[in-house]
Length: 532
Image (tube, rainbow, N blue to C red; front, side, top):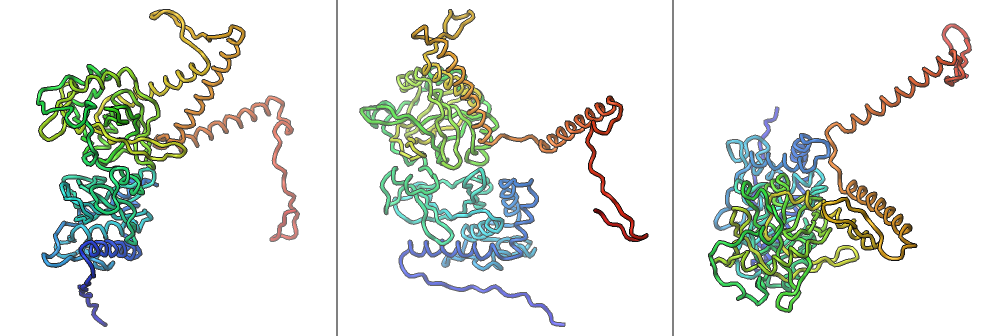
């Protein structure tokens, strides 16, 4: 009987010709190749499938979370040797020494590696269960403009959620979905081809507009990378350093805006890369836009705090009454209804009372009892083509918890009705505080016809809105399918009982309930029967 000898690991040295940038690109290409090879390695594939099977049916985000939790239990971050770039490349090395799939690892049942090793392992596990994967590289904040990157991680495309960052190196300070703070970022496919980039890149970079065009997956430049044109409309010197406590935002903006900010805090827009559609205005003769604050429900606020990104269909309310819905495919908050112009004018005119500038260039603003330090800016919006129209985007300054989505839904509905009223010349009549009616303006002979057209248009708009919400993904209650099946069954039993009752009432005649045709059976011996 031959004794099985455990294979020894081999270290193969590669010399990459060219400068540091060429070596970095070669490393990215090797990581992509390692992901593709290891995804087909049976022990690793089975392990990833076992973790995915623990999630609920078709809960793809739950599958990713299970792999995330398992990786944190088995792996620890350890740097490469000082004089070498070490990459666990083969499927066996990733399985044994990074994930500790054999139960031993490098000792004590743990695997080790730095960012490139864990990127190869994480990408292979996610790729093995059918999730599209791409690579991303970042340079730390404050880096000089250039094209070199010092950190690599993977992003996975989760159905109905979009691209999600999977970077265990950030644990325990940040969790699943968090994007490392950076001055520039680039994306690659598994063949090592660059897909897009954003930030202070010196080559093939044409400012903020170029960053959005190069980013093929809807990535938005971080808030810190946008040029501030001055909140007062007079250039950069519109605000001088002023550490006074600003006036409460609600005195000029919407009442009760950010109702839960005192209890739950706020999320600063820096490092988030979240944008919203805006309407540019003239500031100092330029078409610019103010970075908005968005209000979320406490539940959605906690989701963004954990996942570091909104989910598809998340509703939000802007600080001037704009109604927003997050589109996971486009990667920004779409403006589905305009804000309240009166509030917007008050906020613009009272900007110097609402904000005070700090020594770091940020601004203080006050909501309720909470004084917040956010990067409120006037920026040049980016153009993004969405279908047949171009959306203007600006980064979100802060996300705060409150009653926003409920209010935004009401504003959206009221706005739709107001548009239809203007279209058909319908006005509200009667004094305030008393019963009020709708009346059609214009020619008295056409009023009845116009009112009927208005009512039909209202019904049509209501049907369209119901269909839109249904397509947007209605959350089903647990066991909904089973309950519907039981209802159908009860309805069918009720129908059959009614037929049986009618049959008995007619004296039991067979023609009341048509029976199934009976088969004729002919005997051809004791052990043979046939059907005609």
